[in-house]
Length: 170
Image (tube, rainbow, N blue to C red; front, side, top):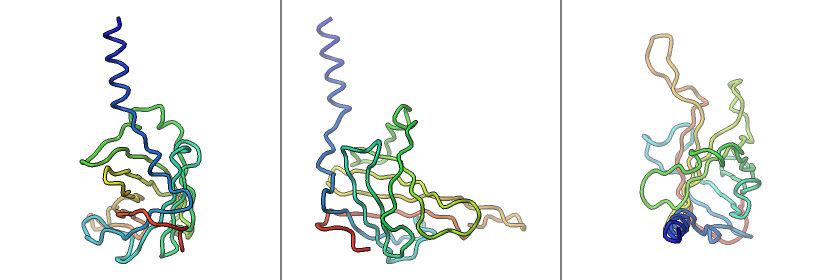
């Protein structure tokens, strides 16, 4: 019995990580979009993102996202409550990620396509201490000619963010 308890506690320690060092307090994570066209649509080259995060409130008020193109202006990251009780909360992809978090954020400027202005946000807390942010909205549609055509409101972007002092400036 003691052996089983020890094994369970050991597994618990392996799966739980202290993420408190990622909280920004009065600071931020900021950085540019990855400019490769194959991982960027709906965001211009040169756009930067700014993220605030509070790891004590990942499930109820985790932070906000801003971009220097004004698409997002201190837009709150909205948790999806059901995810925390689903295996999806253990989402893992690629190496070097301590934790991947999934949120929804509402664009500050409308996409204008009648499909709402919500965007999925994947926040990856990296072993290096940096943060990656992925924005996802829509998917390529099919044009009348039968060819694949991305709608103007399709969005996929990856941002590499580094810790910086002070609040977001945009």
